[in-house]
Length: 106
Image (cartoon, rainbow, N blue to C red; front, side, top):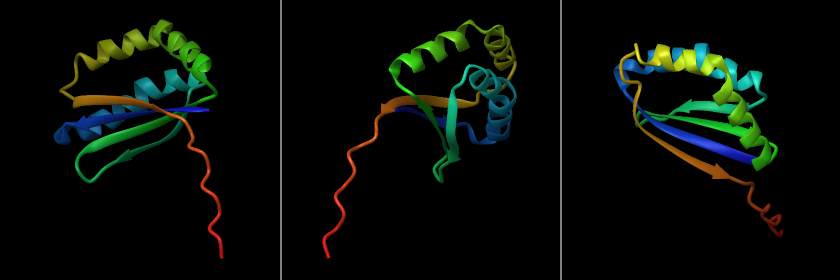
């Protein structure tokens, strides 16, 4: 498994719009192409963190290509251009599970 974490620095006054846009326009396209959202969180310092799970890098590439080619993605970006700024920065990092720690000795 691989995991993709995206961290956005949200524009606080537009946070509700940001979440609504994600739920209405972005999430359905991702799910239609079998992306798996592990969770989305808001941090105390104004960031939004999303973690996605993929079987492997090939699955990630396949899903991203399908999402990019989906006409709903183009429509979502047209909608986004009509919205106020949703975030100021976006960071993306890929993760793999670390080896399990040995059980503590007693």
